[in-house]
Amino acid sequence: MKLLVGAVLLLTGLLANAAANCPSYTDYSSTPHEPYSTGRSRIPSMRPPPECRTFITPTIEQAIFDINSLISDPDWRQLFSNVFPNTLDTTVAWHNPNATEPYTFLVTGDITAQWIRDSTNQMLPYIPFTKVDNDLAKLVLGLINMQAEELLGYPYGNAFQPPPHSGLTPAENGIAVDLSVAPPFDNRTVFEAKFELDSFASFFQISTTYWRATGDYQFMYSKSWGSALATVLAAIRRLQEPTFNSMRQLNHPLVQYKRLTDSPTETQFGNGIGNPVRYTGMAKTLFRPSDDATIFPFLVPANAFLSVELSNLSTMLTSIGVYAEQAEFARKMASEIRQGVFQYGTSMHPKYGRVFVYETDGYGSALIMDDANGPALLSLPYLGFVGSGDTTYQNTRKMVLSPDDNPWYFSGPYIHGIGSPHTGFLKVWPMAIAMRGLTSTNKTEVRECLDQLKATTSGLGLMHESVSVNKPAEYTRSWFAWCNSLVGQLVIDALTRFPGII
Image 1 (cartoon, rainbow, N blue to C red):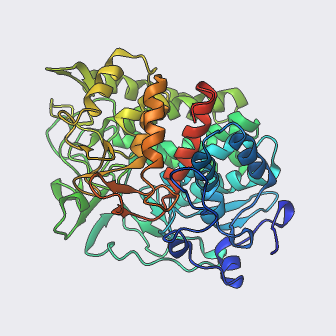
Image 2 (image 1 turned 180 degrees about the vertical axis):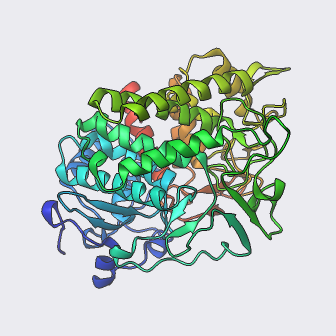
């Protein structure tokens, strides 16, 4: 078998896989493979053969070896070996490592499209290694360039088709029908046009995280990044506008989305512009990170995330000494949004006291819940918005982790946690269990999260999108790359904070 390493990394992962007669990973991930771990859980080995992996770097192989040497549980050694490299093993659909301007197209898993948010989160665990691995750095740079090109072409898309120069065939989105979307989009380049505010924050996040890890800012001089930055900042300013002007006439909406559907989460109120809002400093969004429609357009965790990343963006631009006007603009918007979250995005709960709400409209309406998808209220310390000991966050944490007070928290005989309207009742997302562990300061709670995650793989050794609380064999998506990356992060974080925990 030919091991592709270093300078001969795959240029087009999926095409190379086809040439090697590799099976679809959707099929491969649906069946357990030997060898199994020697622990009680008998976790199968789910990495594809080396010739079928879409990106290989010795740095990550060494990291897996080093981290596994710190794990005493043989089941977790196998599970970590499966999930940590999963994005590199299976989702690099296309990578052009051009020295001057690399490109990377990263699919979300079993859906052949690139989500801005998912692709950033899939790549985050590898960024600390980019300082010592030039090939990995090019992979991340390629993703930054790809996201910039996508957002410049259509800023309001949440998921995108492979670029024409990749040679990959665009995927058909079977649910992107009976739509009325403004501005209009081209399905040959945009896979889905649900505007999600966290896409903007995620673009900033991968740019600033890569810069902090490496000190490299060459992406700023690509053909798209600076223009995409200006486009996104201008869009955020427009999204802060209220629904009505001072004469109680409609402000012209920046983006609209409505669809003929029998599912209320697949279309928007108000003829596609969302329910009315007043000015709060926060920015509106039509959809949540779950790809479900918002009820109230100010999605609080998305705004919290955006305020953090605007601040990080301003710091990066100021430190480098470029884009001074945009740096100041970002700093001001970060402050306005943060103030809006605290002024309008909290509420007094009769049981918990002051809590962050999930959505609001600035008129006093508030939605009390949390969704498994990040950014979520549970993830606020992970995002950097507040510290884990913040009183309002701790009150919120108790609320969203309560089956009595978060309507989307479910419990069953072998798993309990936060779910999502996206997958319906009585399904918990392993992603939310991982985030609970990442935001906990209690070793016992972190260990409980790790134990639950090990029990949710349905015998397949990978993280699913959601799992039934009553029937372990019922799940959605055989492999979910974002969650695999997040669980890899949790393992590294837990071993750092609590040596010997697994």
